[in-house]
Picture 1 (cartoon, rainbow, N blue to C red):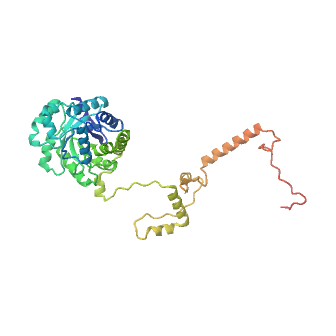
Picture 2: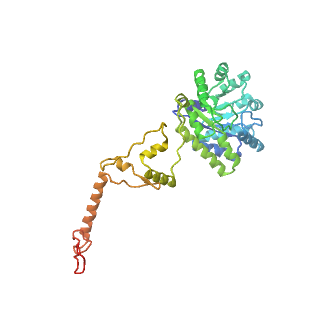
Picture 3: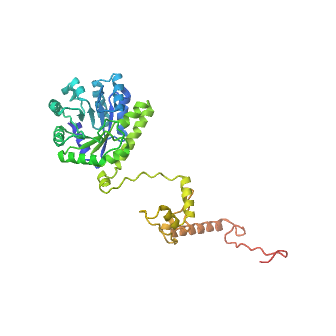
Length: 393
């Protein structure tokens, strides 16, 4: 089962969390869906999820539900789902996973759905009491069966879920439908993934509530992959044509970059009571000029006094004069009006280079100009003599 083995290798042998991109089959239309999924891979997605359109998707929010409705109204059927999986898997060389509700699997046929040629097939509302025939059919077809682990599951339920899983265990970052954009309980997510790690060796894939690249970077330290759907469906749903696809690709690029630079684990933020540092806005020309004028008109004592007495702020050190031999003098230029000005005293190496350039220019002028030329460097400049009516010096 090469596709399933590729999915296992992808999630088990990475140094950073992988990125999964979700899109319903048949959305936004028959031709654009294939191009969109291929483009997701080109712009940073490590694996793909293809959703089977459903009329009453209990786990999905308004964006994915609307995309499912649009796909169904355009005539998408299970045959289109299968063809989407095969075309994308053969043309991108990344694992493709089918996402379907249990009623869709039963209506189409358990054995037939297991033959979708996907690396895995996840049924989020799979009733474990009825899961035996589906798990056996998928195992015989060489298809992984990832399982959805709700946040409210107790230890016995988690054991049953992880025992039925293969490929990965799906961890919702928020106990909400897809498309949730509110805050995340990162300490709670850390505790939950710790419980799962103690129960299973399967990789953990997080989804639901990872609405921004910043959220993905916060969740990444606790899981092996992050799957996003609504941030990609939303621009395709509200903007048609190439502009909608480009907006979705911008999301893929942003999430992929965020996973390459994950945030500090939430346990550090919790145990040490350190809040994440807000992003710094680059200074504008006006702000830099105002800050420079303020520093020029206020001495160190005044600046320290403005910070407030008794506050836990670093002390303001008095400025010291820099010597020409101090390398820092060439690396710390003052700023005026948002632009860096040259250092007051150039670096010694720069000074020597300038002297060499001046000597070279002097030699060139001496060789090219006649000795009688007033521009000849060897001709001394005469000091004008004061005339009879000129005042003496």
